Amino acid sequence: MKEKTVTISFRVNESAFKALQAESKKRNISLNTLANQMFIEFAEYDRYLQKFRMVKLSTPTLKKIINAASDESIVEAGTLAGGSVPQGFMLAKSGEITKEGILEYLRLMGTHANLFDYSEVVHGGVYSVTLSHDLEPKWSLFLASYVQSIVKTLGLAVKVTRMPDAIEIQL
Image (cartoon, rainbow, N blue to C red; front, side, top):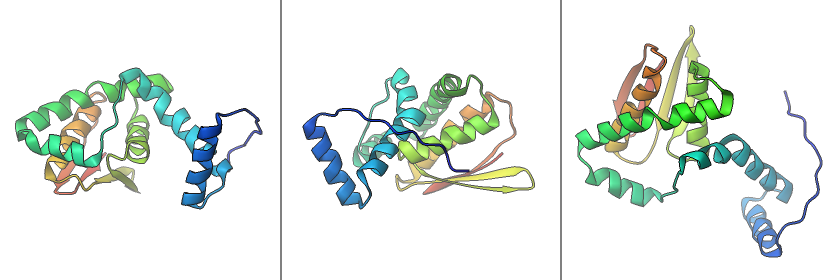
């Protein structure tokens, strides 16, 4: 089902307008499409994460931080991070924490935070979710701890399989 659109008109700073025009040309999309993508990203993701004081890091910087930490520290960080921010995000967005909310949260983190590529398959009511990445094996360790901590709040049965460049989650 195609979502309904609305027509709006507003003023923007000239230098911002020129940057948007250049970016839409670079991506080979209309200025309208680019603006709509930006609005969607803000509506679905950024406005909620502002409450949690999120920071943006380059992939090489994140890799260096991850690789400098011990496996025990990575597991602890994943467990702590998975036990707070995702729940707050889901509550801020929908007012409840559900299995569907967890899947939506992970989809949004993949789409907007670029922490992994999200893919999902459903077989007989069991969700098989793969989070693939290029951040090396310690990132899989972090993600496995992170996801287990998120799911633990619901008391759901979960199986997490870790690979060097991905994790598979079965819910």
